[in-house]
Image (cartoon, rainbow, N blue to C red; front, side):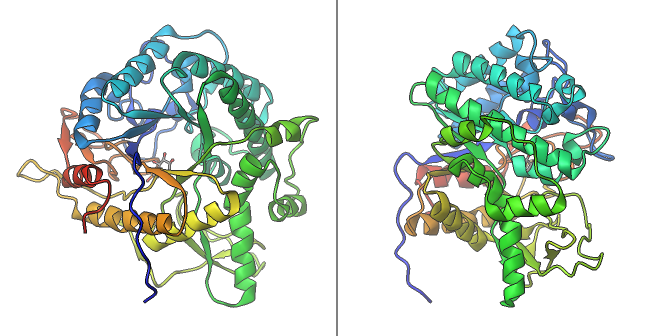
Length: 466
Ligand code: BG6
């Protein structure tokens, strides 16, 4: 086997964990919060996002647990509708106050706040006025961004503009209550998001001293099924369309030719207004947030009406696209209980590809194992499978660092159990268990899982001990 000298995780490495507002907070219409598109979306047969993990009312207790685990960073999102209930109207002081208190609490424990500005929860009022298809949403986002930088910029140095823009374009169901937009509309939404994120990036640099800002797409290496060159082209194409498109625009300030030609051929090209590409080119991210769960494997499209074979609506399961690629099986990899591939080496591959292409520091903003955790009679949650999963991924992260990749932190998904986008509390990711299930809110008690104690040791040692 090829010998590799392992480098240590750098000093000051941001060991952390992640959540997002609508998946964890609850209190969906309390203290002046407006509705977001997620408040209308109730995953089938499961608990909704309205109570979630009730973090809104357990904030101090939750941050105390973060400190106990030793977290150096906490990646969370701000609910746009707590700050601006209508998306672009009056400011809601109670919402401002909630995040002021959360940020102060984190800072008091020495935990670095890493703030996602927008994680799937567009204000409903903006959605009703055209959502991201409308240029007004760009202005609303800029107004919202100004408020965030002005209010929290003295304590928050790490900002993420938009969570998984590529997932919102490729899996639009959950973000668009009512009619699902056409592909043409989705690529217009996508362009408008690029402009909004670019404007926020420029503003952050103007308003936040030492502020660092970047995108947080869901990136995954795409493998060809065989060394058949036609499969390699299909994998290249899908990687460019699904992944690089989003980082190329954010970092290089341009659409890549493969994705652009794809949009032209399909009739999806967006309207680009005068000045848009200049703004996009001027905005320079400082780092890249990477959400990594699994790789995907594809083969050449047949273009005979069978390329797209929907299996389920998950963001991580490729389904194929007519004339573009077919989803293929990867016999080398195991799957989670929910059919997501487990590919720790694929994370190293992905990080190396991103670094080669952009040469920017990276922060892993999501990675983790969704499982059917059980609270056992001993009052504990034994999750050795999560420890095993994370151990393998941390090792590959260390190998990527040893390859020269500049990795500044690792925030697994998720700090605490929260509502999964498709499977509610039937699929848990947290280091901390929340005592509730789909139908019964029980007592919402926080219970440290075995992985909590394991991660505590990893953080203490600044890496794996074996
Ligand atoms: C990412 C999202 O796509 O995956 C999170 O940013 C999400 O919001 C996470 O929860 C895990 O996905 P799921 O569907 O298992 O909740």
